[in-house]
Image 1 (tube, rainbow, N blue to C red):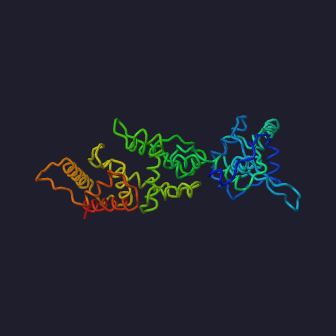
Image 2: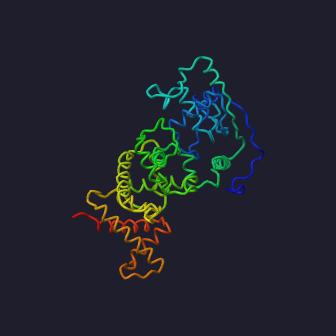
Amino acid sequence: MSDTNTGKLGSSIPANNQKIIEIYNKIRSSQLVVNTEYQRKLVWKKPHKIKFIDTILNNYPFPEVYFSQGNIDPDSLVLVDEIVDGQQRLMTIKDYIECTDVFSPDGSLSIPRFNELDPDTKKSFLNYEISVRYLKNVTLEQVREIFQRINKTDYSLNVTEKLNAQYGYSEFICFAKQMIGEDIDVEGLTYIMSQADKDFFVNFFLGQDGQQSIFSDSDISRMQALQYIMTLVATICHEEYFSRNTKTNEFIKVYNDYFPQAEETCSKMRHAIDFIQSMEIARISRWYNKASLFSLIVELADTDLGKINAGSFSGILNNLEKRALYTELGISDNSTKPLTSAELEFFNLSREAVNEKLSREKRGEFIRGLISMANIE
């Protein structure tokens, strides 16, 4: 946003310290509230919250929070301030002190509950000082602008990295992370993949015994590998192709707390990949490029694999690849037919990795046609 829309602040905003006990009492007495007009909903999960409280218990610092001057309650004659940034941290502190939410007596914790702390540790926790910037004499537009600026993820991050920064413990994201061997804290997860399944997917997607990985080092470091897996999972769950990452991003948010299709999707993907590996297709084949492999896994995941002759299907794929290579190299061979227009379109769409809905649908339709040719009747 431009400063011309909100106006320059009259001066910089100094930081002051407030004790947890002071802030907690303001929240409890409704003297400090969340302005829902510009705040996002709470997305922290159990591991986030436990690690955050552990930070305080060990007296480590955490980023400052922002309050703004609110309005006077005409009934209580009390000034009600608003939380501009830091609601997840402050609500987690409130829940911890009150032993509610993930800190309730019902579940297991890797840290002691507040009511289990000895008196000195309780005092230390309540006296912990939080750095607070208090916004005075600012307009609502300026408050929104400040919130946007302090929550603006680094512009160099791609979409997946930004979503991971906000929803890193989403059940959906964690499901996909397990397939590519990313180190995650499984505490609080509702679905933890078996070690056998983890090893299976990691070996397939990242390569084993010198086999080529599906992903480049850059794909992995910039989370493009994670994005690929999430889009693959979302497509199988949605049972319909979609453009780019639209449905994927929706799944990340909808399945933040629970991913009900995890076990079924894991099974479908494992069976599809098992089938692909059973065929005599070289790892360096174009059928292992990301776009073609995506279409193969999606289509095979919802196919009765018992009705497909693996040998026949691999023969169809290998023959088609040979014809594609001959066409590209301009090799004329009376025993090898040139590619049809539909086959040419498929390979062009796969090579360019076009991710619009129509392109994905065309690739899927083409693969379904090849599968039908290998059906056992």
